[in-house]
Amino acid sequence: MTIFNKLFVVYSMIKQKNISMSYLLCYNISGDYMKYPTPIQNKENYKKTPKVNGVIFENALNISNEYYRLHDIAIIYKKPTPVQIVRVDYPQRTKAKITEAYYKTPSTTDYNGIYRGKYIDYEAKETNNLSFSFKHIFEHQINHLVKVNKHGGLAFVIIYFKKLNEVYLIDIPVFYELYLNNLKNGIKSISINKAREIGKIAPLGYTPPIDYLKAVDQLYF
Image 1 (cartoon, helix red, strand yellow):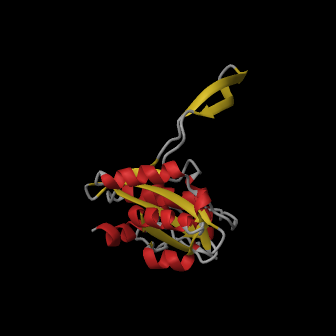
Image 2 (tube, rainbow, N blue to C red):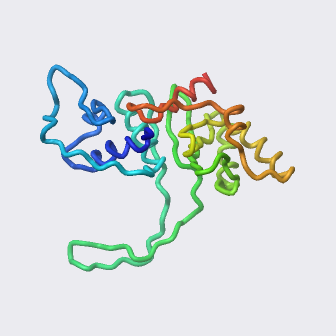
């Protein structure tokens, strides 16, 4: 079972209102509670979440970023997507249901924040194949990251290769050069071997599930 399959246990627990993230960071994803002098919760009172395949990569990043914030390592959030609400229904007086809405503007990238005094901005992607197709990232997203890099920010693309359970960070100048050269030569993807060559691997674990800031340290500091 991969780390992301195990991660479903943690992500499901987060959604329970009576369990906080700070508590979950003391939990072993393999299913056992870590031995602390004062247990936070009785194991017998906890009902295990069934194992589910296909945990969304984004959820793993969200949990990792929450870990970084709780430990005062970095402040990184997922960007909200601006939406124009057109129609709202009110099935009940105290409830409202959005029935029609549109994106105001094309979204830029997924995450941004501050790390070690530097602005950080990145796009997160995943692939079921042994290569990442350029069709899965928009040109305006690449251009946005190029501009962030130009102004001194840390900008990169993070790619999860699901078949191999490997995550790589690719610095945007390197990614952009490869993007332009490959399109010019008719190559429309980045192979896993190329990602290993030009990128930095992000360690996978428990807390955080994707420790990608270690790869950031190798790339930029």
